[in-house]
Length: 411
Image (cartoon, rainbow, N blue to C red; front, top):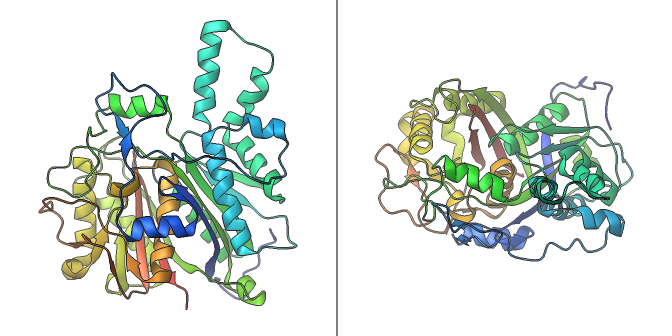
């Protein structure tokens, strides 16, 4: 349900009733919960394209078949879908079915991506340079744009409603969840469906490699000897609704979104402020809106890309945010497991936090060697169970985009 504004009862609580995810660990809650819980790593040689001249030659690819199964999409439309769109549809179906939404079809859709159907764009450009335009090419290239991918998603599942697309670098995935939270919290919508997705493409991979942002070895967030990130790919979708809506239909509530903060760091295009001031602002805002103090947060999922500048800046922000309690704060970055999934990262990591809160475990920071002395918190090094009520997840991107989400275990 969308509009008119309905906040006569004040700000509303916002919950998640459906989670869908596909990563290099596989598709679905079970395979991903196992991979993250056990601290597995899904990074290996790039197989999607030639990287023989690149500095880095590894990535976290999804190596399974991306078949959609039964869908309302025509065979012609299915044939025009590329990797990223297929990932989005796979994750979305899981989230929608888990939520069990029935009846209401006019539901807002918020999507997030940094590159959309970039593989289609590359293919179109390559063919154009070699052979010029051919019949049918223009129709297929339309599936490059995220708006069309959103229409395909709505058609495949069977709902409509306004589509919003957010492209805000590596904060994108957290932004789509946060925007949905704001809409429902303020009474603008009863339900919002969100998805964030990105696939590895040669253009994006080569661009990061040219920036010397990629490590030739699997990334090691917060390691003193870290030297760059590893690219990954994947998608996550969340069915988000008001607490009243979920309770009225007896839905299984997977977790609650209690706070969201966003900020901008104008310090440098690719290097955050060394003191992490804007990141700190986003973290503080998320907690302030939830009326939760750092002492109540049992786990922090760090952005943790394993670049020297990012991890140092984020460590400073976490230290300042946690204060004297930093030494007791459990922190890890899941990018050591599946790489940096760019626009999908914030949504995937929110999904991981929901899994961890529901099942009470902490995802370890994979293969840490020597901890950076700038990190005064407890880096989770081994798989293990935990008892905690709140998790904070950070997503920070090039261009100074920062976002933090505060999640709570379902009562």
